Length: 76
Image (cartoon, rainbow, N blue to C red):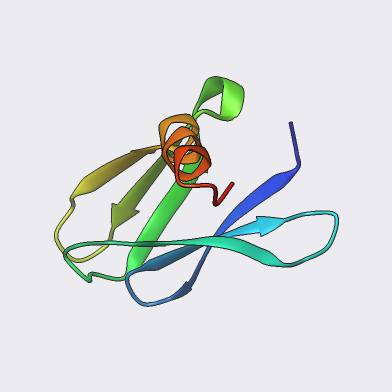
């Protein structure tokens, strides 16, 4: 929906940025620490796909589920 931007701003970390404010609203750490290669949202924006140039791994984050978990903790 264009309200969230994903950017690999530091090695091994993806920043989710609010496009209205430019503020980082979440940071997703890659467990392998490899630099972020390509990244993009899946259809509907519910999943974020991230690759690494070093190992060829593909990681998929379920953004909707992550948000539900944060809501349960009162952090959404």
